[in-house]
Length: 160
Image (cartoon, rainbow, N blue to C red):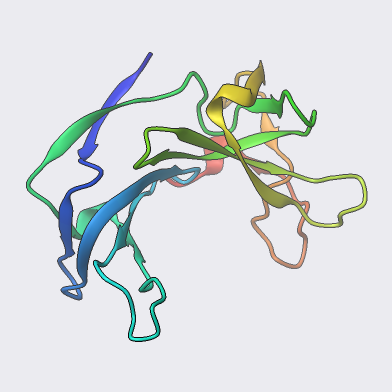
């Protein structure tokens, strides 16, 4: 299993650009290679509701603690399926949550949909159908052109 380093979940962090601060509750890696951390501020609003958190690019996060994340067997663009529903699609994000679970984002186009949608599943209920290869696989459900929502985007053309 591949391991990567990142900021530690559950630790205090600051957005170096805005000064927004709180606790890191989520780390997500996206199809285009971006890594984001979701930071939730402490406390509640005057109305007793959760304060809005902020999804921040890794480069803006200031935190003193790091941890090692175990990555699932899936990589961006892999063809996968949810073993419960049978939904097939392609991995477009991997998210580590504060409670220790890992969710897999699958982008898929269902029969009655014109445009693809994102679905999130616990990594334990996702199975690999085929590994993505830059030379042969395209992710036809990812849109490059909003006027052509099903235009193919080849993995090798994705910015890193």
